[in-house]
Length: 135
Image (cartoon, rainbow, N blue to C red; front, top):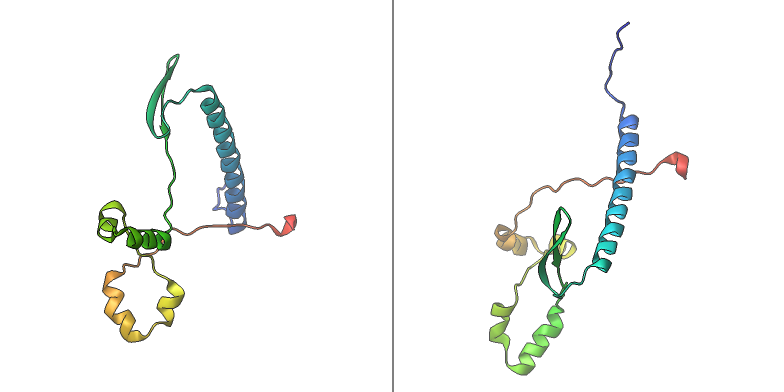
């Protein structure tokens, strides 16, 4: 007797997605714990940069980064005080981001004048699942 295969239902797909997401999180947590243990065993000589570490048959490149954030308002004030406004464009990248609430509330003439500088494209959908049985 041959089994008839069928497409999974939407509920089954959501269940599979939830299981995969939980498994993915568990593996990610495990990987991060292992990375922390590796970092503890290594003597990293650089605060920032790439080091190559060998252990037996394995070669691992370890990239050390320092995350930096810039307070744009404070930076601008400090540059004015020091007379360094001209250097700001060389030393820093300026990334304008749209304030969608203000944009949507702006006058049509303002939006029409500036809309040529804005590219809109759909992003990848994100998914969050809740299970009525768990609540």
